[in-house]
Structures are given as structure tokens and as C-alpha cells.
Image (cartoon, rainbow, N blue to C red; front, side, top):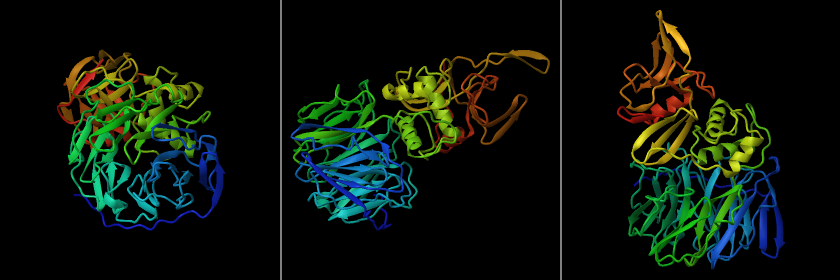
Length: 495
């Protein structure tokens, strides 16, 4: 069991705007210090769930990131990345908008009474409101992966936090029944649901793989299916003898005795994607929250900062394009990710968010691997991208620059700057600079005995430029080493 004794005090914003309408009362938190930007979202209701409204017509300082339902299922709350709370046929108990947060809000869950809720940030800091109580957090603890969200424990006297690597952290009445934190997953974890008595839970990954713990029973998964869109969340039915999975395109998959109540396929706007599924308390319906894939941000290039940049970074990472995090700064790391996105989608390689790239964000999905199984690196010379692949699932995509195929001379002999095609494996590595006759390679991972490697370099342009090696940025190779992405023996397929 992993626990933390760090305690936090939550402070609510006292600036409120109250509005009401036919769909119920709406309480909006104001954040006067931030510029208002339209962050569109959609809410879809099925079964006994009803639609009570959304913030789609409002100008928000930060985008909506999650939702939670009331105890009777008649209403719900939406929470923004800055902790602003928007109530729809639901009471308002406080918010974090305007409060300085170390990391953005990523999720929320309500107490079983419906008279309170918890908000959690990506670093595991927990903030309670109403009758919710603080039982602990992961704030100031070094995590292996960011927190995705939290769910209430038995009786609302505790909660579980879960991370993208499937790590589970239990507090109060929530008991630890297991996790995937020590497993090597094919895809990151994106959702969690508890059994009716709280003596078990399920975790779901983006490939629809299900992991069951405690008294949670396995009823099936989409882990072996080829999906049109990644899975983004799950909800269980009332008996606990079945569950639903939701895809980013609004598709719904049913398992066990969970009844199909409908899907948002064909309803989700082309420039939106579903990010969360929330079940009704009685387990006879569900709601789905869809967000605009990337707001219309106009031309964005190096040096840009702000919430719009963060939105683009989050969208890139959601499709696998590697970034060290969403820092709200259009820096060289983001330019590398933009180049990779443009290459993978056949767009002009401008390195900026231009009109063509903006249009691409509305329809793009995670790139597809060519391999059918196994863990490997795929280097696509045509598109000039490097993909980290596990059993067909593309975990990460990097901008790369392979051999230019230009002739060059070394020690009086002529050569061609060619990156060989074929299936290889990592056979040798140097943890630091490796000085050679053609220059210095940073932390190279060699996959041929003739000296061809994946390595860091100060210049990784959007076109072939090397003497034959596969370049990635120095920041990227450092991250690969730190996370053992390129172990000795790993397959490298160049095509």
C-alpha cells in the first residue's frame, strides 16, 4: 500500500457570478486575473442521465477538464483546470479559481451524500469542499507518473487517487487492493471504477485493457481489438456485474450485465473528443464529457505563452507526441512535437501552429504502428518520425532526422549518409558524449555494428540531415535514458 501523510488546506475563491435557467442553477467562478478564452465543451447523457447544461457558450479563463455527478444523478459539476467549479442543477460548495496551484486540476469526485466534492491536481494535491474531508494527498511526493483523477471510498470517508501508470494511492476508508504501478503496460491508465461495496476496483487503459483488483470481477475488455479511437474512461453498472467503456469518439463498449444505453458516436462534433465517462449512482445510465480538441488559437510559434499553448501541448500529448510536460511555453521541445505532428499527418513542416496544423488537430488521432506485436522502436524514414511501440500501440512519437543520403568523404574514402532499413536491436550504448570522426553524439544507443545509433543532438531539423544516425533532441534522449525507453536488446525497425 502506498500512502502519504502530507495534508493540505483548501481555499475557495470568493468571487462568484450566479445565473439560473431552465436547466437548473449555474454557479460560475470568476477569475479576474486571467484573460477569458472560449473553451468549448459538450455533455452527452444516456439512460436515466439527463442533460442539465454545459459551459460551451461561456468564455473561461481555463478549459474544463472533468465532471462529477450529484448523489441523485439529477445534476453535475464541471471543473476547470484552474479549479473553477460550474454547477448544473447541483449546489455550489466552493472552488479553487484564483488560488495558486503547483499543477493544474485534473479531476474531481463527489461525496456519496452529494453535499461536497474533492478536487485533485496532477501532482496529487487534494482539496475538499462541503462535507468532503481531507484524508491525505500525494502533494510533495515524487510520483512515477502524473495523477489522472480520484474516486470516493466507502461511505465517502476516504478516496483513491490513481496515476497514468496505474499506481493507486488509498486514503481513509479506501483500502488498497492492488495496482499496475510496477507493471509494464501496453497503454497508459485513464479511468477507474469501484465495486458497489468498495472492496475492489477496476482500472482501464487507453487500449481498453481492464485490470481488476479486490472483489472486482473481470468481464471483458477491448485490449485485443483494433479501436477507431482510444478509450478514455469507464463506469460500472448498479450491480457491479458489468461496466461500460467510452472511446474518445463517443463509442461505448458494454461488458457483463451492463446494458447499452446509447453512444455519442456521430454526435460528438468533429473538432471535439470525449475525455470522461461518469456513471449514474444507480448504475442505469451515464454521461460523457467532450472537449474541443484544440481551441482555435490562430498562428502560434516559438516564444508564445499562456493557456492556449497549454491546450495545444495537452492535445499533442494526448495523441502520443512526446513533451516533457505542459508548461504553457512554446519552446524548442514543443517545436519538436509540432514537427512530429505535422510529419505524421502529412502537413507542411512549418514548426508553428498555422491554419493547416489547426485544421489537422480537429481530425487527427494517435498514429498507427506498422508492427503487429512486441515492444520496439519504429523509425519511419518517409515521415521522419520515431515511434515507441508496444503491441501495436504507439506510446510516444518523436521528431527525428535520419541520414540525408548525401555523399561525404572521410579519410579519403567516399560514403553516402544513409540510414539502413531493416530490423535491428540496441547492441551498445554510451551514457554521455561519444566523440567520433563525424562529430559528437550525445548518449547514443547503437543498433548496428557500423556505428548507426539513435542519439541526442543539438539540431534536429524536420528533414533528413544526419550522416546515417537517427537524431532526436538532447532533451528527448535524456528522457529516454531516464525512463529506460531504449534498453539493450530492444528491437529497432527502420523502414
